[in-house]
Image (cartoon, rainbow, N blue to C red):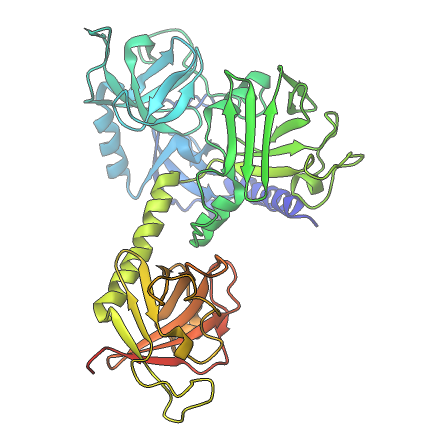
Length: 483
């Protein structure tokens, strides 16, 4: 069974359980109380309603909530409800909305941005279509907006889009709609990915699409900054009619003449590129070399070519892209901060370390005296290792010092690896050294700090940034100079 079939099966099972629970008294125990942020047509359930929440499904990304004054239960997307531990807290949240409890804004033109901060220079987190609605969550104090030296009328609002994105909009080219006062139908939720070609195209061009393995790294908590790189992703340019796919081993540019639809997929005319959406935050891009090829579950998962595909090296393939659950730059910043904290903790124990040869000298050690090799690390993430030729073989790549004007091995240090529980009892952590005059790869070591001494041993079996084991080589021992 393919991974996609497994996901579908799990989702189906979850739905069966969900519907079964919704009708059983055994499922009456509440998770808490929810505040409905956007009016739900079923019921209807107005924005600002306080409802009991019974079930949360992370697989299907929804809550099962109870209708007020009724035994009926309905499903709502997670983004449409804010969950609180008590009814009192939920009602206090509703009171905070004030006059904005029933207020929406409707975009008066295409391309209006939803921004990260209430400033015209802030990063765009979403792009609105003409006529698309957003739910107002609060008024916001923000930057004065002007054009041609003239201040524009309007104000900033903190809003919720119909896919759960949040950010700030300026109301100058938007129409306000208060569903508690106007008779016209309330703004409706979008039909989601796949409702029609326009909806799919809007999802494609309005989101930031990153390789699915980025999200897998994020879910695992193991961010490899070597591959978690801003240059990788699916990048769109509607003005130039260009789609670009950048991956570690793939670089493709598709210049299309027009956008069409076939078999539930977006088709980019005069190119082999096709895009199929799997929800609002996941898509599969295929450049099979045959525009009429349909994706099978196996081919979508990357396990096999599609039926009848005409594959040519360098001209065919597929990849899955997602909208990350967190901002890209925040993820990178947090990982860099984690690594820096580990480096700082190491340096607090010592920055200079001199090698102590084994008591019984071996031929490999070359009769080295204490201090014949010295390792120095700095907060700038650089290291200097002198006398590496005096170390036993197998610890430092041969010729690491060659090409250095000082005769020392130089390079970059990083605390990028993670320790499994099986190693934490014996070792304090893992550090990686990349030699300037090496092959460009990392040399990984386990280390322990004991009684003003440092012990290093090569790490082996590194997979997914997790160390597998310690090498069978005896640890190198260092002490701080003068000890």
